[in-house]
Image (cartoon, rainbow, N blue to C red; front, side, top):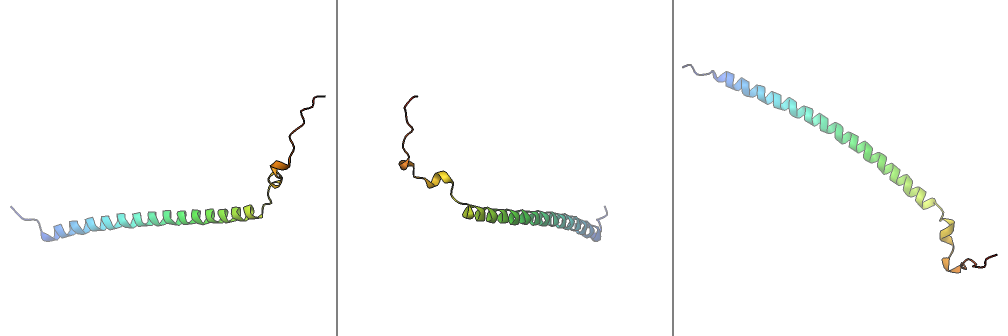
Length: 80
């Protein structure tokens, strides 16, 4: 029985490593895109929150909240 050539075993391992490397490289590129998209979304949401905070700080209080509820007299119950 003839033994397999040592080079063929080495070449199979090299091919498997190349396939694995290509797969890992593609996965890394995909993850990089996901991280980039997430960073853009994060920055946009951060800007929106900052704008909303500015709006809330500048907004005057509602007219109803300025009046003291205890100063109001109850509605009259006189029927015409």
